[in-house]
Image (cartoon, rainbow, N blue to C red; front, side):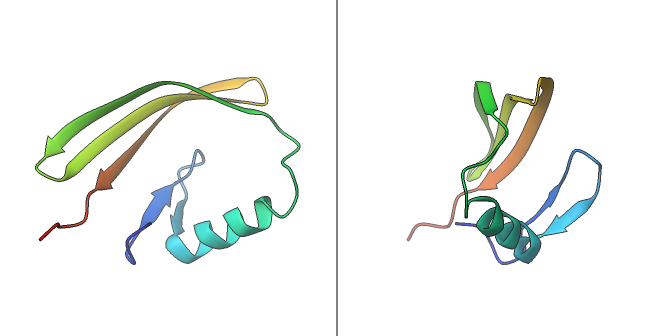
Length: 77
């Protein structure tokens, strides 16, 4: 689902590699998460022919943050 050169910036500003993120997700979901994640206000805006900006609100442990993520659709032949 993610490109080989995927990376993300966390709330701390630290940059995380694809390998790190996938390993963290694998570890996180071995057991049900203790914290409750609430998401809302999803918006998707096309930036270019196959590039999109997704924004949303996340409430985690009572803290509300606005998040943004860019997505690129794979080329379809």
